[in-house]
Image 1 (cartoon, rainbow, N blue to C red):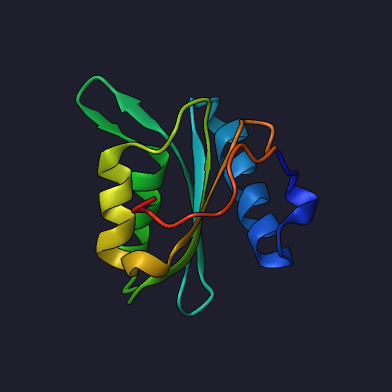
Image 2 (cartoon, rainbow, N blue to C red; image 1 turned 45 degrees about the vertical axis):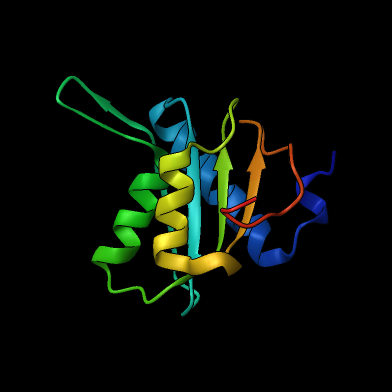
Length: 118
């Protein structure tokens, strides 16, 4: 396992943003993505009686609604792996080249960077 210190500075920023979003809400997951223009989007899981959206799902939706043309990287803070739905959303917007980092809620990486298809 590797720690956030082994990430690039830009990817460490994504970990920090994801941790902040998760901590603010006490949600099960936090996530952050960086688009092709370097803009970042961070979110936590939405779990309402009438609406459930994963943290990565919220990030992708925010990027799309802000006009992002693609993604460079994504971070998911979770005790579980990325869902098939989230992998598909990352691929839809970012293609196969998106670097995806999965970490536990403290930000400690659980897997090496990969693409949504791996």
